[in-house]
Amino acid sequence: AVERFGALHMAFNNAGIGGTLLPAGELSPEDWQRVIAINLSGVQYGLRYQIPAMLAAGGGAIVNMSSILGLVGDPAATAYVAAKHGVTGLTRSAGLAYAAKGVRINSIHPGYVDTPLLEALDADTRAALVGQHAIGRLGRAEEIAHAAAFLLSEGASFMAGAALVVDGGYTAA
Image 1: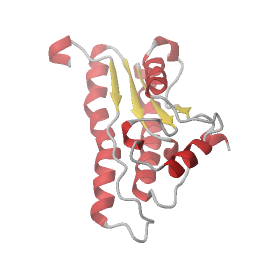
Image 2: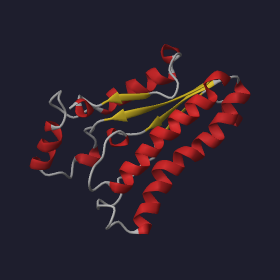
Image 3: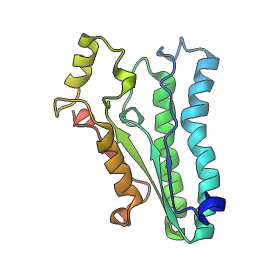
């Protein structure tokens, strides 16, 4: 980005996989490592290179994709929950470390979003997911995109290390 555009002022770290759904006592070390490597370490590696580029450019904004499961637990999504809680903590720590230097770092915590990843769900499972959102539906990808655009904009210039929840009321219950 720096070579092509001359500087880096915005970044969005959005790598993630669901991983194997098992409680902690049953999850293999390999399944654990795979989810942590992609969902948490991937964000750290992005920050490791984005922050210096933004400091050199005079500042910028970074958004890290977390999840509602970065704020609450789930008995089967052990590695995913741990990784997304890690993204939340990493965002808060990095946000504090670089805010005064002109780099704002925040995270988004979406509820379940109606994407092709959910198409394989049976009707009962889908209805159960919808029922967990007070607003009565799943999120839309563009709603999350609007939140990311806001956090990258000057409209969010007083936000650093924040966890923006866009979840249709899921975590309010």
